[in-house]
Length: 163
Image (cartoon, rainbow, N blue to C red):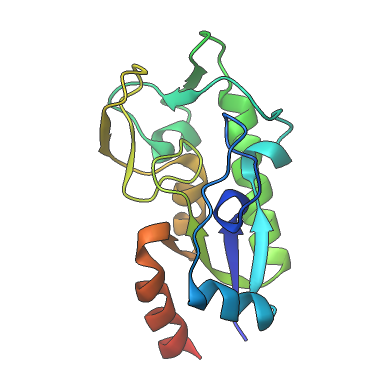
C-alpha cells in the first residue's frame, strides 16, 4: 500500500511559522490515516526551526530548484539567511519519504519548503508567484509525486491508478 508524506500542519499540528496549523478536514485523509498510509512531517521543524519563527521567503524571482542548485537563498523577514536549514529540511523530507517508501506527498502550498504551485514574492509583501518550495522541488526531482492541499482528489486518483 502506497504511503503519503504529509505536511504536519495539514494534519492539525501547530508547526507553521506563526505557531498555527493549516488543518485540512477531509474524509480521504481520515481514510488514509486509518489505513496507515500517512507519514507526517514538518521539514522546517525537523531541521531545527522553532515554532513560532520569523516568516521566510525564497529570494525574488527564484524558487526551490534554484535554492537546491545553490543559485538562490532563503531569508527570514529579519534578514537572516536560513538557506542551509531549509535545505536540511528538504533532505530530511526526502530521507523520510524514502525510509517509508512514500511515492506521494501532500504538501502545504505557498510555503518556501512545501509550496507546490506557488511561493511568495521574496519581499514579504503577501504577493504570491508561481513556483515550488525546496521540499517540493527535491521530492519531485526524486520521483515522488507532489500534491497541494487543494489537490487531494488528484492524489486519490493517482493512488487508485498505482494501487
